Length: 236
Image (cartoon, rainbow, N blue to C red; front, top):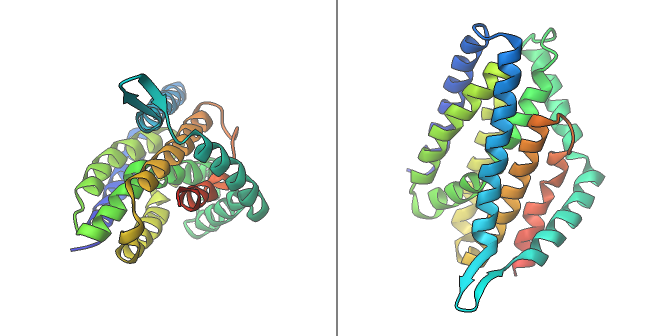
């Protein structure tokens, strides 16, 4: 059944966030800060390995790079469009609305936790590839694996940043669900080259999220999201 992968992913985030909040009450502030930095470092290295695995190609003459121009143009053009729309502000606005509706006005980390966690679990290669595979082949295996990873990620992030992380399930449900539905009609256009370019740009955005975990609010990652769409266009 199409969509089961996203449903499992949503449940994993909710459960991981709940357990993370329980752990948060048991950890001192300095432990929470160190855990958040460690999560940022791990996120950066995972994203870097994902990007380089698609960018470096082993050939008889040696290691060659591919897709560099696509990545550069996608990020530059995507950043320009993102800043014009100011997607980051829209994320924060939605986060503030959630903060009000959940009566979390006393949680000063709520919005930052929601935005950071949402970007971490929404824009990676597994989210994109998994949703597409679920839509085209009704095979949720990638999203099931992502659900396990997101469970751990949200548990750790919630234990250091608070309950705002738990609400990352909302954009995950919306974005992965929409991509699964769209991929049914877009299947003929999903070439290997296109998917590789999406992987590279997506992992670079995840790397930026890792930077923000270590140095908060350094990069407005949400404003770089249009780079994913530009990457698809340039792949043609």
